[in-house]
Length: 344
Image (cartoon, rainbow, N blue to C red; front, side, top):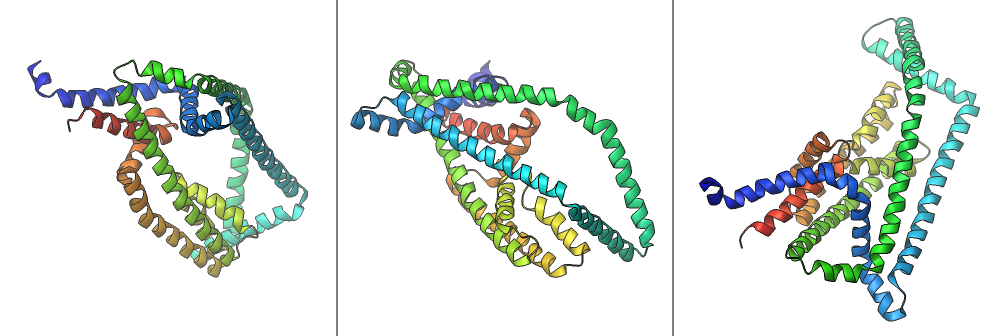
C-alpha cells in the first residue's frame, strides 16, 4: 500500500492503459453507433446552431436532410461501382481473346524462367499447367463449398451493418434534438470538463492525422497516375493510380502491393522500359512518403510515425482487423488521459 501511495501517478497511468484496452475490446463494439452519432453531431453542431439562430430551422430537420443526401451519394457510388464491376465481368466473359492473351502471358513467363535457369521450356509449361489444374481441383473441392457455406454469414454481417447504420442515423436525429440539454446535464458531473478536453484532444489529433494522410495520399495518387501513364502499361492510368494511392494509405498494404508484382510481370514479358518506369515511380512514391510522413504526421499529432505503426500492429494483435483503427485511437486516448492526470 505504501508503494501505491508513493507511485500514485504511475498506478493511475497503468489503470488508464488497462481501462482503455478493456473499453476498446469489449465496450466500444457495443456502443459504436452511439459514439459515431455523437461525433457527427458534435462536429456538425456549429452549423446546426447557426441555422437554428439565423433561419429558425430545428437541428433534427437539418441532420435529416444531411443524412438523406449522404445516403443518396453513397448509394449512387455503390451502384456505380457494382455496375462497373458487372460490365467488366461481362466484357471479360464475352471476350474469348482475353483468355488467350492471359495464356500467352503465362507461357511467356514460363519461357523466361526456363531461359533464366537453363531449363526445358516445354517442361516448365507442363509443370505450371499441372499445378494450375491441381489448384483448380482444390478450389472446387474446398474453396467454393466454403464460400457458398459462408454466404449465410455474409448475409448476417450485412444485416448487422445495415442495422448499425440505421441505429446511428436515428441516434443522430435524437441527439441533435436534445444536444443542448445533454450538455447541460453533463456539466453537473465533475468529470465532464476532463472528459470533454480528452475527447476534443482526440478529435483534433485524429483530424490532423486524416488531413496529413489525405495530403500524402493525393500526392501519391498524382505520382502513380503520371508514372503508370508514362510506362504505357495500361489504358486506364487514372483509376489505377487512384487505387494505388488508396492502398498506400493503408498501413498493411502500400504501393508495393501493386507495383512489385506488376514490375516482375513486365520484366518477364521483356517490357523492360515499362518495368523501369514503374520501378522508378515506386521508388519516388516510397521516398515521398518517407519524407512527408514524419513532417506532416509528427507535427500534427505529436507522435512519431513508428509509434503509429506499432499501434496498428499491436492493435491488430489485440483487437483483430479492427485494430487498424482501434490501435492508434487507443494510443491517442491514453495520451490524452495521461495529460489530464499529469501535474502541471
